[in-house]
Amino acid sequence: MQKPILILGACGQIGTELTFELRSKFGGENVIASDIREGGENLMQAGPFELLDATNYEAIEDVIMHYEIEEVYLMAAMLSATAEKFPMRAWNLNMNSLFNVLNLAKEGKIGKIFWPSSIAVFGPNTPKENTPQNTVMEPSTVYGISKQAGERWCEYYFKKFGVDVRSVRYPGLISWKTMPGGGTTDYAVEIYHAAIESGRYTCFLEKNTKLPMMFMDDAVKATISLMESPSEKLGTRSSYNLGSMSFCPEELAKSIQKHIPEFEISYKPDFRQQIADTWPKSIDDSLARQDWNWSPEFDLDKTTSSMLENLKKG
Ligand code: AKB
Image (tube, rainbow, N blue to C red):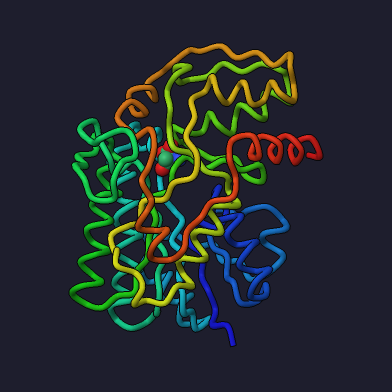
């Protein structure tokens, strides 16, 4: 029998889709969605929903005890662009929420944790192409520093206390159900909405800024498949590199023009350009492929077809 799962940050870009998928797999009543704010009706009505602040240890503990939670997916975080504006808030949210779930697991109150890291753990001195799992990191953003520190703490809690924590370094994620909020890779979602609504888009990154990206279906598949892997197969307890496709805004625009030939893009880089310039262009994810059979399904054109088709139905 499936033991209950708690999603913290269920109303965000990844949290929403993860909640839908876990509910369809394990039944609505076994997946408790929670967030600091209310979400869409279909998320709140298809199973239990709790208003919950991921930085409040006692409140999380109460929910865990009430539902007899076994697994927690901690999806609440402040992303790269917003974190540059509110460094201390970002540090507090990103770190305290992680300590809360790590400590609950250390005390034996939950069995397994998923915590997302990001390509933002890498920095300007990291090799940019085919970035290895283990390499120079030195992140230079508030968000990247919090994710790198988080990775170190995950590995520490695993080694020192046997906490079963699992993680991937997500690239930019592209989805149509929920908008991303406050990230540097958000252009890759905004552009599809703009293509349909107005036929034009002004991009906040330069046309040749290549970044690792992934379609949401692949990201959800990776997350669940990592969580279902036997513990002894997982040699990495900091966070796994996770790759799929890499492209720049100009290539994305060309992919959209195959469906909407009159689509126009222009470029007006802002402060997010400096963040993107410090991140990898492509990722070596051979360890994830080897340890838990990771393999993505969506390339750029398949992503574009799915995004445009679903947004048009809208
Ligand atoms: C962001 O742009 O901040 C995120 C990320 C790559 O972690 N999408």
